[in-house]
Image 1 (spheres, one colour):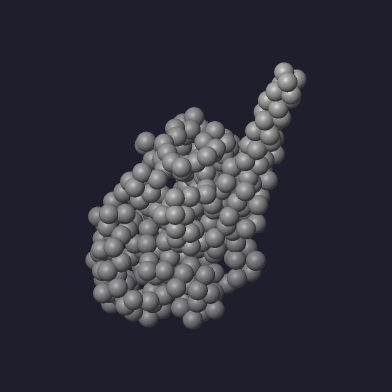
Image 2 (spheres, one colour; image 1 turned 90 degrees about the horizontal axis):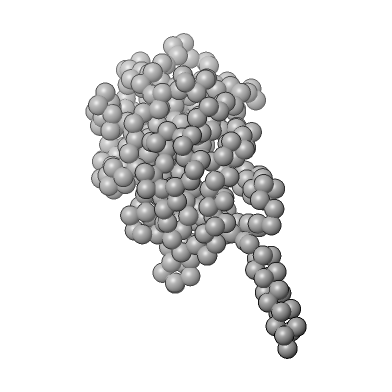
Length: 322
């Protein structure tokens, strides 16, 4: 009996060790998600990752349904924006974790309480077709009467990055809602997401646009007739933050995952994928200006969350519900 109990105990310990698995919900592109998971497993032998990939909106709908059913599945989230995670933190759905790696990050890029940490910078700037005569240098250039009817931009009613962009620019003293009113007067088209905006500019249909950086810079490198500008006033940004669920079944594994993403090795992976790392002291992908030359505009996720519905409503009044 003693031998049986000892054998059983060891078997249970072995099965527990074998079961060091975390569940990840992510909005990363599939190829990036697979690279992230593979690199984490390589750095943490014995830990496995089960992951689900979808757009942030669909992932959150799935997660909310799981929470209502009393059975949330993920231990850790890696999704598009801090505003979504700020809302979850306020609802008590995230657990605080102050990663030691956060010391290498600007305090604006993570929750002070440790509810979420940014992993990369995806900025929104100006893209223009090289067939034009005058290259824009500032956000204000898109309100010039000379470019009336020639501007495309993603709609914040459709794109999370565009909603954050709206919150950032309207929150800036030098721009505010007056800037969007001028864009509306200039017949700017606000429709769909970043992909559609980029195609409109690259084709020359709308020679000017607002779009996320990597989409323009990667396509330029492949021969697309466009240029990307980081406006002198600065750029808005989304950061693909990582967070641990308050219902996480494997908290220790989730903490390891957070630490890895924020580590130098994890940020090298971000750089290899072609994004700007969020960690201080890192390089930038080919085709990007030096990190010190990219001015990030002020952004407060809590304020953006509080104003989200009002911002969408006001935008609809100006541009229509597209």
